[in-house]
Amino acid sequence: MSIRVRFAPSPTGHIHVGNARTAIFNYFFARANNGVFILRIEDTDLERSTLESEQIIYEDLQWLGLDWDEGPLKGGSYGPYRQTERFDIYNRYTMELLKKGLAYECFCSKEELDASREKSMRDGVQPIYNGKCRGLSNSEKEDLKNKGIRPSIRFKTVDRDVVVHDIIKGDVTFPTNVFGDFVIVRPDGVPVYNYAVVIDDALMKISHVIRGDDHLSNTPKQILIYEALGFDIPHFAHIPMILGPDHSKLSKRHGDTSLNLFKEKGYLPEALFNFMTLLSWSAPDDREILTKDETISLFSLDKVSKSPAVFDFAKLKWMNGHYIRNLSKDQLAERVKPFLHISDDFKTKYNDRIADMIFSIKDKIEFLSEADDWFKVYTSYPEAIEDEGMEFLKLPTTKDLFELFISYLKPLKTLELEKYKEIIHEIQSSKGVKGKALFMALRVGITGTTKGPDLDKICTLLYPDDIITRLKKSLEKIC
Ligand code: GLU
Image (cartoon, rainbow, N blue to C red):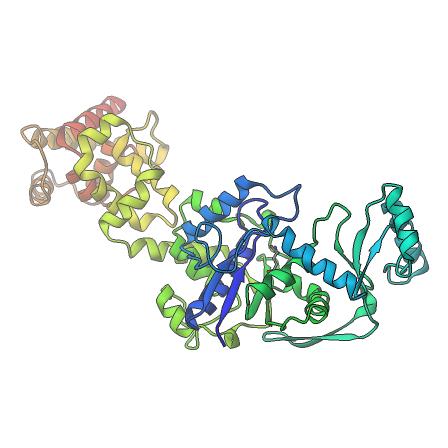
């Protein structure tokens, strides 16, 4: 069997991590089985779908590194891949269902349907359509149409059980009497999700429908449509939902949940990808750090767990930090630079040292936007120094130490590591200052803070003239 899977987002905003995880599982299943990964835009919700959101979806997927083989921007033999361009196709099948008597026109108004639903609720029975329009004659329908009423199309449901054979959940049985005759096309001619999805999946020859388990209860309706239209039923795999750390459904109130927010904070797409791969899937050897290629060689739906995954924000941070620390100096610089706020003067003066400066703070950050704060040790000297730092400036040895350090630096254009070590050694032996009185005092004197990268990095990456200026400012604070 040739494997064809699809990711079918509705273009209503940025991709949520739940949907991104669905896309990732489809992607891995396709890649692991020499299959095709298709992107389809489900934009039949005309009020909420926008072209702008569609663009955002492409950008989010591209940022995450999810390449689709067929779909918008790529083309393919089974298009169009946007549902609003497929209305003629849906219409053809609607005609067929109507002709075969497997669907019918329903003229009931919203008010009528609401009243009937409320009555069912009051009576404590399942609120399903009462079948009023099932047996309308042709002339009755004509009369109603002449009155300007546009019908919806309902699928005629037979009372029976539908079994969904799900790769992850096993067999799940749904009696049709919980949903009854359901609408497949709205009065404005727009097909509903459950209807369009079947026609698209069938015509696009989708072999496996892999999606979130919030769609499991839609599947019996879809199976009825597959059967009515004589289509082969694909394999289904419904992935468990993602929970927040408090075990309720993951939502915004738990923190960032859409891809753009992770991107803005400076999560690396490859780290997020790795992290989401492990939401309800695990490698046979339980390895946690996995490249895409490694996952492709290991991925199978058998290892998808039945139970919901918990989105562990702390683990994601840790994993991101791990990926950051594994970047080379140039890779890190390229990723971090867009997050830094640095002046043009600084850029001009330090252009060939910026990558080293960034590299010196790589152990401090878990996501890239944190770099800007740490980078300030290089770009600025603070107006005020916190008490913790002032204590080192006020030590009796500090004034002398700074003056001496300045005198060593004065003749130098740049300070190499060897020279720095020599100066430190000489100060230690001539003045007897050591430990925090030496290193912390110098650190605060140069950066105005007690925290930051290694002092030797700061002293050798900043030019001596800037170090001298900063030490002089600190001296002013002492006197
Ligand atoms: N447009 C649907 C969604 O975003 C697709 C569901 C499916 O994969 O069938 O939830």
